[in-house]
Image (tube, rainbow, N blue to C red; front, side):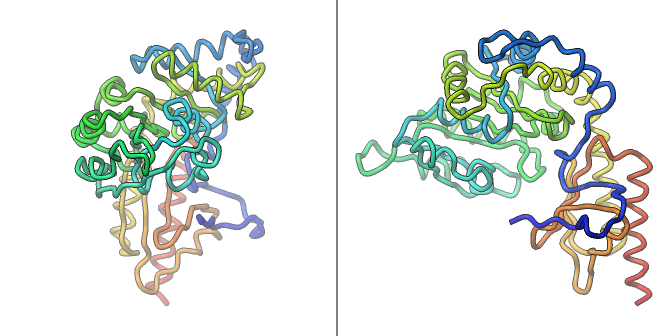
Length: 349
């Protein structure tokens, strides 16, 4: 389980929270958009701001319809429930969220089998690995129904060519295709591709608004109208139907309009941080989009970052540092200085 550094018991001000890009606060302009949102009862289909968000993102990704949900976990779950029936199967990468971090909801609540496949270093499963786990039409096995991919994966932007290989293997086996695009816009920023290029091969895509885009809550599931209609029914059953949700959808609309282009700033800062850590010789460093992973070298203790007001995620063996829109130039300079101070103190010891 993920452990977090910088306990509140330290009673020190937080200068930079790098645990995740989910920790961002709505800016003043986003709060103003939320306060001004036109609202209605979305369960009745009466909230015009929610409708605008759903239709707008669906059109942007060249899909028929969209569905606003409270979380990415519920969005992925509703997608899997819409695609699959009881006794059917989702195939997904063993490191993907739907396998590791979403409490096996599809199995627990939908009677859907989850089949994990190995993931290569670039975040994609090999086509042969996908084909190998597709089940024969045999009463002893679940029915293979859906291939769920993920981009980004641990911050890695999976190349379009690798996505295409996995998609081809899925289609050849008669599978439907879902993309967990929690950081969809980080992926297209890193890949330099059009939004529709990444979305195009998939039947459904889940896009998170509360990670790199900085909204306080919510994801949008897009896809064919019939699947989105089924997902909407599942959302209601799962307790995800919301009433005057336009105040939340307005934040998502603001994020999509104002916070996509600036994602490159987070990527650039992550690249700079990775280079800084390598230069300090603190351990093995890996960089991917807006994330930096550090596996401390022998004798290196980075827990002192907490005393400098730096929060981070510390799952063994690598600590994770996620750059986001709330890390400005001042905070970033403090991060670099904190690491430099640790390295200097270690050298003097």
